[in-house]
Length: 371
Image (cartoon, rainbow, N blue to C red; front, top):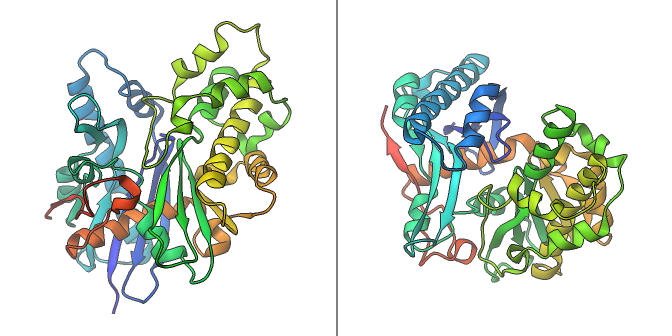
């Protein structure tokens, strides 16, 4: 019997919204339909600006959340139209929201994570229950609140007797470690920057929102001293559980490494930023999961051919491929994960893992906004 959920994801790349209609009624989850929409440029600029303090930010944040809910609602309606599905047949929508601050454990010992969203408005517009605010429950329990996708990765990609890593490269990169030994704990953590620094540098110097297939970076050369200095960032050597975001890996972070250097060719800096993402992911995998056999990559970074080649070069003993080869296209993985997490919440099942986030225990995540 069908068990339909919708997942909505707008990630740290701040480039758009991915939406899926998934059926979890079968033994293996399956995506019925997928659609996506870019974020309007003014809204993208506002989300990026809200990563730092600014004038009237509470007002701006509230209106941005409403605007995102409107985009979410249009994607829900598109999915329903494309599949001739009545809203009453969908059990719930899992809506992640847009992360603008992520500071777990800081300041007062609890910290916070903030995803802009208006789930009440989304429920009103769609007539479907909405599950949102997934991360804060884990943070309240002393966890990192991220990554939250490892349980889903285990359910969808795990294979008995095989050691597999799932690497999501959005604005920030995170990895899930699926050990061949079922008795070993599930592990996952943020690796560092994904597309965030590459996209920002590309926009600044070419006017393009991202480096299409990594072609610009492929024409540059890696700057070894700059790469070594950036890899000295404390976050990279910090043991898991750990998470990060644009609070750390942002334009000012990069600027500090370029400040006292002779002028570097922008294309060479782009090549070096691509290598930074590849090396930080590869180093994370080598240190935490030496038994890994296969690496599957999802998120927007899976379409960066230069980055994928650099990953394969950094991990010559592994087979590096995209998640499409494993049954789920790269841009559908996270949206499907949040549909799955919404189902966990509705069924009163836990969605976090103590061994991943470092919380005091697994927790039921998110709040439910009834239609």
